Amino acid sequence: MHQTDTIAAIATAAGEGAISIIRISGKDAISITQRIFTGPVQKYTSHTVHYGKILDKEGNTLDSVVLMIMRAPKSYTGEDSIELFCHGGSLITRRVLERVFEAGARAAKPGEFSLRAYLNGKIDLTQAEAVQQLIASKNELALKSAEKQLEGRLSQKILDFQKRLTSLAAILEAWVDFPEEGLEFTTIEELCFDLEAICKEMEHLKNTYHYGQMLHTGISLCLVGSPNVGKSSLMNALLGFDRAIVTEIAGTTRDVLEEDLLLGSLHFRLIDTAGIRDTEEIVEQEGIRRSKKMMKEADVVLLLLDSSRPLSIKDEELLTFANPNKTILVLNKKDLKQEIASLFWPFSVSISAKEKIGIDELIKTIEALVLDKGAPSKEEVTITHLRHKQALDNTISHCQNVIHALKTETSAEFVTSDLRAALNELSSIIGTNVTEDILSSIFSKFCLGK
Image (cartoon, rainbow, N blue to C red):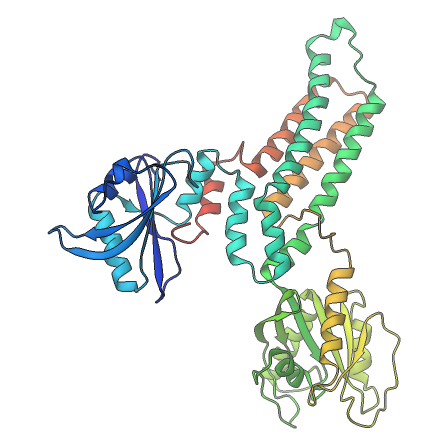
């Protein structure tokens, strides 16, 4: 990507609509727009809005538009920027964009506007990533998490770690550079205490990764149980439409069915699995194998039992196999005569999937399990990218090396290299020390026009 080029792209979603926005950014954005717009664009002051027409090469009107001008550095990208609000038909929008290209702009690559904002110091790397997360948020909690990151809350936390580690590094560097001076800014014990405190805070932030991932990618919610306990009926009840086939014949579901689902404030990937039983049928055996695998890997498991019949051997095996910390025991067929009065389990609820009785209580129980088991507070910053977690892992490892070296009286020359490495890892999170490959990987996931 050549930052000297002027770029353009459609900034609104594809399809028909009342208005489409074409975004132009770069040193020639104003002069390019002047070639195709009827008004005196060169004379417009920054952050003003103007009505006019876009003309084709022959001087004929392509469309009537509203133009917004933002002069550098007071724009999203930090460059001269123009936004054209044209009529929202996909054909007319494409024709106006092609006219912009004819006048001298080139097509922007995915995420190139945000990349320029980062390169021009308008946002740091964590904020750039938050832009994409904000767009992709599928629930309120994910949206709030992205908003915090876009505000710079994560950056502030990383900068605080950097500041404190830099202070400690300065002391160690002074010991190395002036050993004969006998400088005594602090003691070894105090240095270790401060480093251990920073490590503890970084460990806490790192441990928010799993929760942050669940918010943004969706929580896997797996339905498991013996055949005919009502898994498919419950899936249909939660979704609000008939996704899974429901019959009296055991073994109807032979594969893993998956659908997106919004329950309360959380986004789930709802997974219906094959009923677990002994069978000689090869296809069903594979379905059961996948069911057991999903039971291990899912974030939350709904273990269904038919409360109108006594526990079977398979039911008891499933109860033994299930992890109580992530499994909700769902006693189905509440509308029938009960054979199972109750079972001791941390999270359990009684429902009738067929009659849709107890579904609201089940949803509340699911939310309680997800949010009450180690979820960060509403004000707490969470990390949602694997690269953030890996960088924090590496930082903690380097700091622990320093602590060990100090306690074993290793020469300060060897200690300072680990602290420098720790600071470099933190810098990579906010983008002050990051490779071109990482930048390409991050911004290539953005949509065009962002």
